[in-house]
Image (tube, rainbow, N blue to C red; front, side, top):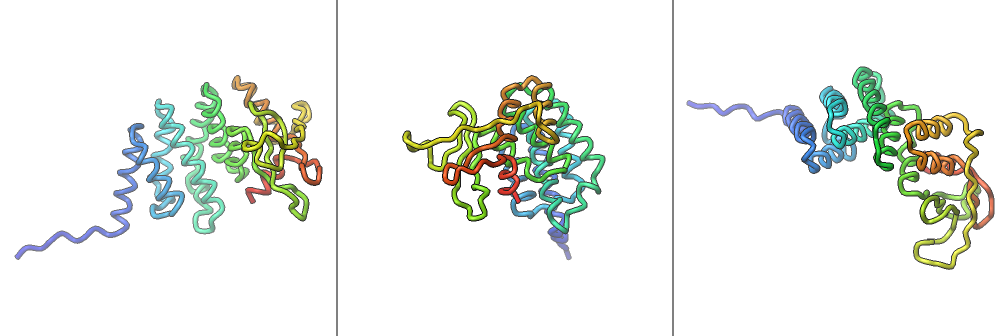
Length: 248
């Protein structure tokens, strides 16, 4: 009489899949593995973000010498932690894995200081903020710096308009219409923050970008932390405050 081996438990199968995906991602040559990790850890939660292997392995990748793999690991780790902070069942993830979070943050700051590409640098700034965990809207803040625009709502209680705040190669203005599809739209000039008057996070990010040799990013941040005008009601408002409102 022969007996078959017991079928693996679902938990065992999930652990095996998580380990396999992390190992594939660590090679630096498997974009599908990263996509699957984002889907199964972040988007639909079919893999357990609290598994000790997750942050430990991502920290190992971040501390290795492959810049692209490190950036991917830091981006995912930061996003997972911010998401975990906002969910009751995972709210202690950051505290429970303090050594791994400290390793990740140290790696993010080291890579930040040597990143040459503008957008790579911005994403590393986002990772630093997410790993620190003091704000939950770093993704939206940095997304605007990378894309050189924010799509926001007027702060008027009646919500009089959706608008774009544009800063970069296309100009520096706010507009209430789709300016890409029309050449004849009314625009309003932006009011960048005076770097000398910046405080708190704005001052910190501006100074970091300058110290790291990214003057263009520092210039963009002065608009993120500056003011714009609603083209409909012509109310002047804080750009970053509306970024936070949209992220809430």
